[in-house]
Each structure stands twice: as C-alpha cells, then as structure tokens.
Length: 303
Image: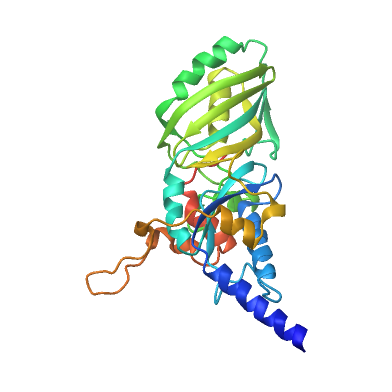
C-alpha cells in the first residue's frame, strides 16, 4: 500500500510538472509518419511518463496537455519539427512566418503526381542537355520574391476538404492560384545527373516540391523531390537543438524548452477579459492531429 501511495504521489507530481511546461522546442521528425503522427507519439510518451493511464493523444477535449507544432513536414520528409507546449502554442504562428532552411535532393527526368518520390511517375523526359551551369543560372530566377503555385497533393482545402484527399477519392481538383512567396537563398551543392542537391532558405507558404517541379520545367525537362530534410526553423537547427525520440522525456524537454516571452501570454481585453488567441486556436486542442495540420497549412513552408 505504501508503495502504491508513493507511486500515486509521484505520478501527480510528474503530471503537475508536465502541465506547468510553457514554451517551444524542436524535435526530430523521421521519414514515414506524418507531422501529426509524430506529435501524437511525442505527447503520448510524455503523458505516459506523467502517469496518465491509457492516454489518447487524438482526443480533443479535457486534455492534460496543450500542445501543437509550428509547420508541417510531409510524411516523406524529415528534420526539425518545432513544438509548442502550454502557452508556447501561442508562439507557433511566429514559427510559421519565420525563415526555414531545407536540403533537398531532386531527380531530373521524371515527374510524379505528388511532385515527390511517393507519387506515381506521370512524365519522363531527357535530361542529358542539363548542365550544372544551366541549373545554377535558372536558380537565380527562383530567388527573391516570386509567385508559386502550390502542389495539388497538399493539405490546402477546397470546400473544407483537403485537396490530397479529394484527389485520392477520384475527384477532379483545380490548382490553387499562384501566390507570393519568398526565397532568401538558393544554392546548388551537388550535381550528379540525374540527381542534384539544393540548400534552400525560404519564408512561409513556400513548397520545395513546387520549386523542384518548376525548375525541371524551366530546364526543358522534368524533376521531382527524392529526399527532403528541414535543417532549420526559426532559431532551431537540426544539429544543435532537435531532440530525437529517445530524449522525449520530461527531464530533457524541460531542459530544452525555450520560455515564452511576456507577449506570448494572454493579455486582457478592454473589458478585462482575456483576448482570444486566434493564431493558436487550432493548436490549443492538444495538437489534434488533422486540425493542427489543417489550421497551419495555408501559412506553412512545406516540401
């Protein structure tokens, strides 16, 4: 009985510690799962450590932990995924709008319906004429403030449904109109045809998949993304800040968490009540998988 009582006290203490966490940190997303899946695994590990029996990270109401992520990575991509906990969810819109860095491996000569290696090949064209010099010259046209058409296979929505879901259901989907995006830097770091590697720094709303597809067309060939890694988001870098799954513990997260500035906390409105935080509303539901991703995609940098 004494041991059981001690365990209860310890669990209560761990849960209280978990619920007191406020801030942002970065975790590592591996290839395969969606960003929402990774977030749910992260949350489930913390809840289990805090002694929550049979935690359901997808449950939207009466959650012990408020958590969200600040920028979706597709399932085929890996790298830095910024996490907000508690009041840290209110800082995630800043993460979305801020600078991000990616390393992308593109493949010339093949286009796919998803613009990456997960899709079906829909076109094949010669790439023998493409030189390193020609590729580097065309990169300049995609640097700065440019207009970009988002991929059809994305979490952008039509009539409340994701375009990617509509396509998989056999519906015809029209491309979204081109929208302004910013590319701060774009460099070719390797060229071994048909493969080439790009280092990219961009702002919110930018799709690496669209860049590689557009680049292939500009070179009178075609191309798709073979691999994609997000190496930096905001102040968080892949080498210095991100936590791999074995370090998803209360102790490591507490140490890595960057505290919220005073501006991230709710400020009283003119009637004395707290102002609604619309920017993080979709994220305050315990990172509700689909809801968190959907709410962010319109302003998101993705592959």
